[in-house]
Image (tube, rainbow, N blue to C red; front, top):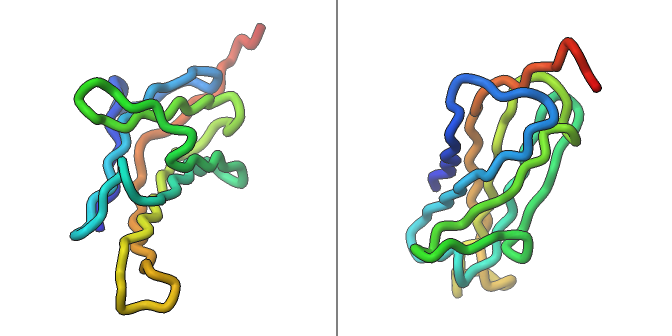
Length: 113
């Protein structure tokens, strides 16, 4: 499985930014538009969890999530993707595939308002 996030900032972002993240989970036989999935953004001990119900679907079927970095705090941002891939060979009807990527640091603001 592959988990990718694209954003305008690849080097770092500041705590408090609301980031529009384009998320792509890929696995054979899996569709982000039709199948269940979960994406977790983690920074230190805090995390934000998103599912298909939270997604904004773009005109070109891109899947976007809004990540409010003020809810995460400063530190290294990590994304973990869980794809629930349809699989008739399993009793529950799907298998879980997981991937994780380090994205970029979230920097604390020195002059908070």
